[in-house]
View 1: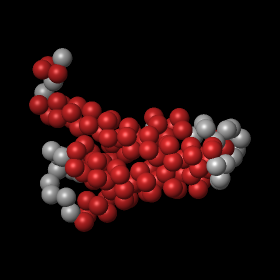
View 2 (view 1 turned 180 degrees about the horizontal axis):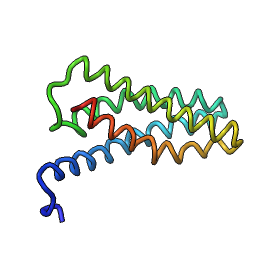
View 3 (view 1 turned 180 degrees about the vertical axis):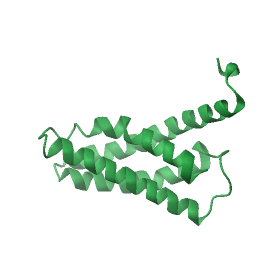
View 4 (view 1 turned 45 degrees about the vertical axis):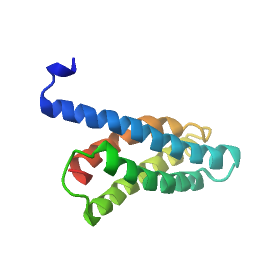
Length: 135
């Protein structure tokens, strides 16, 4: 099946697979921090989200710049790091939105934001990282 793809599509597919593996690691780490803070310690869910973001951002930059997008784009510079921070802040905003929406107006359990954190936010960050940060 892969042999039927053009070289460009194979490259994108390989990046997506690496992003899924490293992204799953980063996401699991972030969700783990969130779950410990919001569910086990019962601290405010937004504090859990912020702490998860800080851990995930640092880990994500290393994994994505050195592995996920290793063969994509040019030299990694301070600009690359700055763009990564912008995308990471967007992911923080998205996850903060999920936490707010699902725990405040909808009054659901603090466990519910984990669903869009796992499935929506990573799709947005893959696209932005590939098209802008590591382009």
